Amino acid sequence: MRIAVYPGSFDPVTYGHIDLIRRGAAVFDKLVIGVLRNYVKKPLFELEERVEMLHQVTRDIPNTEITTFSGLVVDFCHQQKACAVLRGVRSFSDFEYELVMAQTNRKLAEDVETIFLTTSPEYSYVSSSSVRELIAFNGDITAFVPDYIRERIEDKCKK
Ligand code: PNS
Image (cartoon, rainbow, N blue to C red; front, side, top):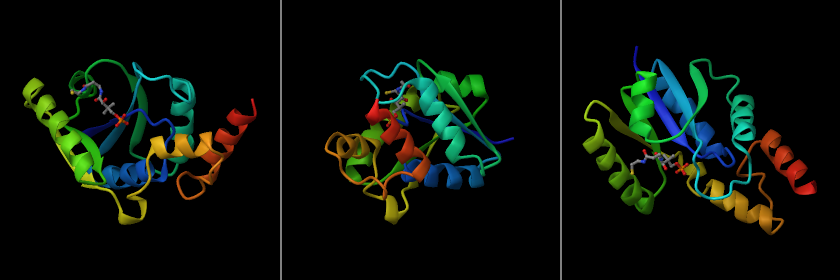
């Protein structure tokens, strides 16, 4: 069975992430979505909220699992018996960052490959950090996240 890990902070999950999950799940037998627990910045959403939101938006993708992890992504891959780390690349600047991470991971664990998928063009501008910035300035996020996530964000902002 070919298992891949898709790690990230998912704060919050966006259309770009969902597109990558759908396409990654079509390539591997199982895709384990790993939500990073020791996220350095103060997140917008707590870990449990990020996991719950991921569950909601991936309900129709059968061969996915969502779990949290802390520490190194390669250790998480070994725990999950995954042969690959899946990452999305939107731009050259993404690639520069991802290349260093992939090569570091390769140095740490030669049995774990990094597989890059290029982001679908319609989502190339989408990022969680843009979503967080738009929220801060009352911008429209309908093109960035599904309605369910937008409603969760609106609920959070009301509190
Ligand atoms: O959604 P993000 O913030 O782009 O995800 C980054 C993530 C979680 C993939 C990255 O920070 C990560 O793998 N962190 C765990 C520590 C690790 O293994 N780093 C790789 C060696 S540099």
